[in-house]
Amino acid sequence: ADVGLADEDGPREPGPWPEDATTVMLRNIPNRYTAEELLAEMIASGFEGNFDFFYLPIDFKTKRNRGYSFINFFTAELAAQFVQAFHHERLTRYATQKILEVSPAVTQGFQANIARYVRKDAQRIKNAWFRPMIFSANGEEAEEPPGFCDCAAPTSPPSSPPAPAPPAPTSP
Image (cartoon, rainbow, N blue to C red; front, top):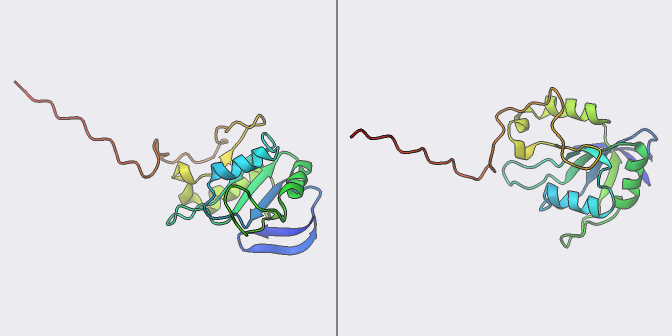
């Protein structure tokens, strides 16, 4: 596939898939897709356990994805296989005319993605529902790496009301 470097602003110069690129940017994702739905499509295509970083940025106002995702694979060969499977394809869960584009991301590698995320999107880190997902080699969601901010992580979804306070004790 003929692809070029990309970031949130779109594609960069065109060229062949770089031999050392492990992080892809997947663009033109239908906005109604959730992270779980996109992951399900990736797993159905045989990519379970092949990546350690997955980030589908969410618009805080609409609670829908922004149309792009970053995925870091364990090897450049796995990333190239992902390109072959998803570049210029359509996702299947919802009827859509959007054609996916896969490009090597500007930020490459697990550590670099974590460093960029912490630096650029510090406000998102405070809400666990908007964080990138970190996976171990067996495909299980993993603990965040050392230095990854766990700033006041919620214990329930953002829409849940707080639990009522217990009644005050009364004296006889």
